[in-house]
Every structure is written in structure tokens, then in C-alpha cells.
Image 1 (cartoon, one colour):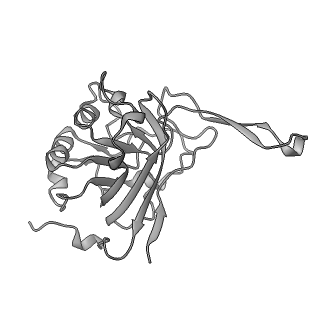
Image 2 (cartoon, one colour):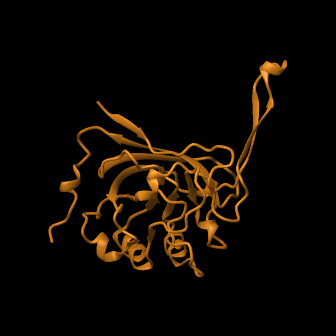
Image 3 (cartoon, one colour):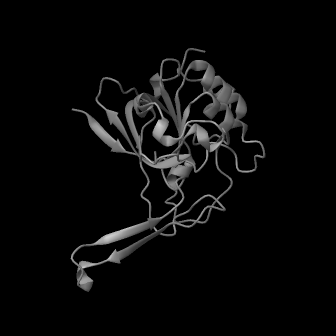
Length: 223
């Protein structure tokens, strides 16, 4: 039987966010316990909080907004790659894996061990520009990572974002892959349909059915 694995981070008040983004606030504005007829909450958060997608508009001035994304990007086959011991995800590192034919690639780093209750840590694993070019060349259409950005913190030109988004590669950031065994899965990534937005929170799940999953030792290319 198929097994569904939720790899989405919850959104909660005062969670870790990208420096400069507004803090997350979830406020109960109507409460049954206070005599109201229903519980109702408001949320104030950047669209790039928690598990979220970056649409091309995030860095490409005339790029597609979230509501204009090709919905075929939201499901397919994903290869989860263990990058927990990597500081930089490079083309050389990616060539160790059989990626061709996968619509999506998700990178599992040590960041999945964080709960987002901690202060922001800029010392996270990021994708290098040569790796972004390599993934585009392979025809990968979705790149996901468990950190809050696919790109290193101290970048000035955002080459990785621009390389991927210019080629309409969907970026998924803030995944939680802590308990996920590297290998192949089916995925579903459903961003909120926010009109004219450059990003959106998303619910992301992996589906393992025993037929499309592979053990980590089987995903390495011959080399």
C-alpha cells in the first residue's frame, strides 16, 4: 500500500524566518471560550515563510506569478538526495546520482534537524550556480531543499534563483526531510493560489508505494 509522508513545516507565531521578512503572527480573533459563535484566526506572514514555493516572479521582473504556474509542476517523480555532509551542493556532487528522468530533486541537509524555533543560522547548505545550470540541463523542473533558501546567504547576485526561475524551474524551500530515506518517490506540492504573488506557502507530501521508491544505495550512477 502507498505511504504518504508529510514533508511540510508548520507555520506558527514567531517561527524562524529569513532576516528582514516580517515575523509570523497567528492570532485568534474570535473564540468560543470567550462567548463568540466560532473560533476564527488571522495570520500575518510573508509568503516565503515555512515550506513555500518561489515563482519566477520572485526574481524575474516579467516572470510568472504563483497563480500562473503550470500545475503539472505540482506532481511527479522526485529524487531525494542526501546532502547532510555537504556544505555546498555542486555539479560534481550531483554527478554521483542518477537524476536524469526525474522531474524533481529534493535536497536533504542537516537543516531538517531544526524546528524553526531557533535563531536564524546563515551557515546552511546551499546550491552552487554550476549545480543549478546542471539541473536545468538535465530537464529538472522542480528543485526543493529543507533550508529557507536554495541559495547561499551572502550572495549579492542571486544567480541560483535567477538560473532556475528564468527557466521556469519551480523552487520549493523550507521542506522537512528529517525522517525521509533518500531515494525516489512520487510527490505532491500544492502552493496556495495567491493572485499575482511571487511565492506561496505550500503543502508538500511524498508518496512511497514500494514500486517507485529506491534504497539510497541504488540511486548512485555508475562511475
